[in-house]
Amino acid sequence: QVQLVESGGGLVQAGGSLRLSCAASGGTFSSYVMAWFRQAPGQDRELVAIISRSLGNTYYADSVKGRFTISRDNAKNTVSLQMNSLKPEDTAVYYCAARKSSAANFDYWGQGTQVTVSS
Picture 1 (tube, helix red, strand yellow):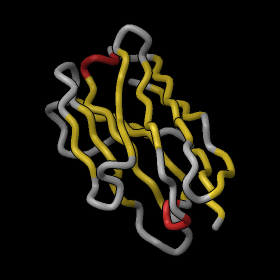
Picture 2 (picture 1 turned 180 degrees about the vertical axis):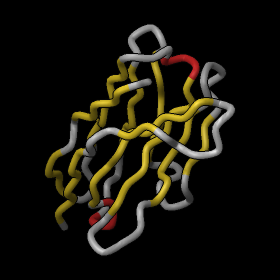
Picture 3 (picture 1 turned 90 degrees about the vertical axis):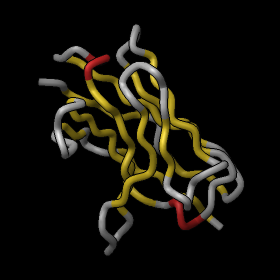
Picture 4 (picture 1 turned 120 degrees about the horizontal axis):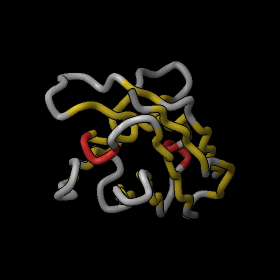
């Protein structure tokens, strides 16, 4: 069973950048599909980006496409989210998540890290 710990959140002005990191332990990291989700106050949690296990295939929500980049380092058991051109509407708690390739749902979650973008 994998454990996930996010870091890198904070307060940034609109137009700025942040890089989130997620460190995984307790499992075979390369066997997991990894993703970032976010949840703003009063809103449902939404998928931000997904990255495949080893080929690095990615998917992005339309709202972040062209601004955010997900990447992973299987040797270091980490997944990152580079966020550029941040907007106030990107303000949310960001969560790292993992699922086995055979699983339908993301079963493993980090505790979340707050990202606040001021206008």
